[in-house]
Image 1 (tube, rainbow, N blue to C red):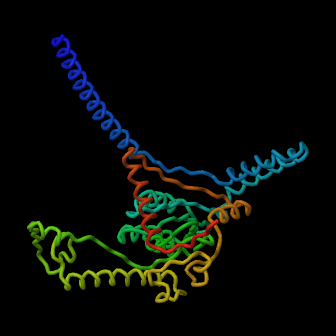
Image 2 (image 1 turned 180 degrees about the vertical axis):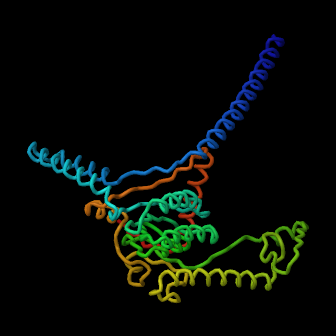
Image 3 (image 1 turned 90 degrees about the vertical axis):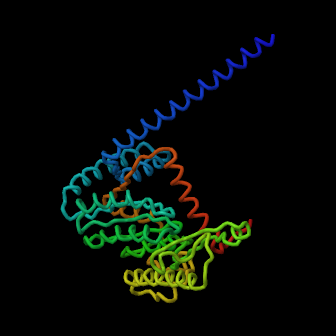
Length: 346
């Protein structure tokens, strides 16, 4: 009996080891295949273009189709044929004003700057001075250098003579507003969060905890200010003063950038790190108009302007997608926790 038990135990252990090896091999193969597929996709153009006019027309026709009589349906079909002919002639005109729609959903690292850059590279080779670019922006801000690059990409559109409109439906704060102010026109929803022209930095310090446990941390630098505040060392008043000076310098650059692109602003009044809702921001000249991005696209389509949505999808693995989603969620959560929000109790 004991022999059978030992055999069963050994056989179970053998099966467990075999299953572990098979799973590990499958993971390695899956990772390799995913990497090869991503490398191949990297070489292909992932720019997708959708004509928004047709989508809006289909939505209208679906609703009307549920209500129209047969006679009305025939009239509508005839009208659509006439519009199609008009569009065919319109696309051949050199002075037609097209609206190109880009989207930027920002996280802390402004990682969406890469697809934005690719879309702008495409636009600058096709768009003319008659065209307009609409950026649908959402971001609570993040790293200064990352959002500085994103703003510089948008500035390329202005330097090329294109009209840039930025719409904010929910939030464009800190680095998000740095991007928004590049546009010749900023449009915001009534309760969109705008502003927060400020700079913030924080880090924990474990020096006292380490000191109590007699753990030494050595930090060697060449240059008096190679490192200021640290997480593990004993920070001095001089270190803190230098760190605050660096923050002030960054804030000054931020203010100058906004003032350059929005010369009508009272920059000292709005560069306090505060945020405002869209209705308040328009009085401060932080935005120019109260509307949503959908309002702008629908108005352009009704005016018979071709409206094209550009998306540049760069495929990534599951971990990459989850990391991007987590980073965006963290950016929004950290900003929302750091501000006082009005709440409506039902």
